[in-house]
Length: 170
Image (cartoon, rainbow, N blue to C red; front, side):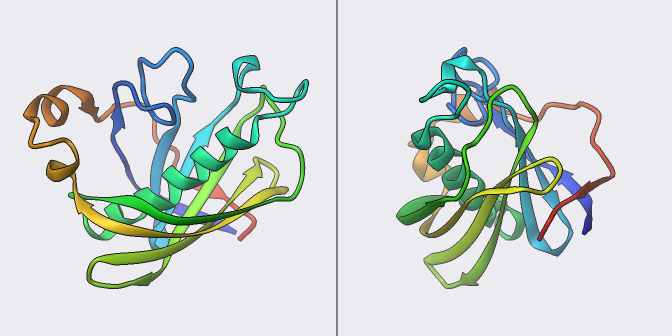
């Protein structure tokens, strides 16, 4: 199914998943899609492998965790999801050196907590891993200890070409 892109989210400077300057990181770009879906676009390199040609399970977990945790920013832009519980199902080996998608959405939104689900898939729609998670909502300023340097210098909007649509299996 095709989903329209409604917004591109910020990247950070050194985050493992989205950090622009983390040499070991994934440099994931996150997009908000219609129907309050969040999409992370990335590809793994040799540095991210476990068994030859396969992505490490911990990195898969980090991708799904950050993707679902970012979904709250669609409805509460100044909030981050702080992980409370995370359950991953690894369904197929995750390949390196190709574009992959991490998809997430909120399934239940409460005052201080939200629940979400997501999956990791290939660009042709093959589901590789799924995740269900719970997060506490926390204001970004509380997470960065009111450090304006992070907000002004390290929480970065990258103005690049934004696709109009993404085709996703679910």
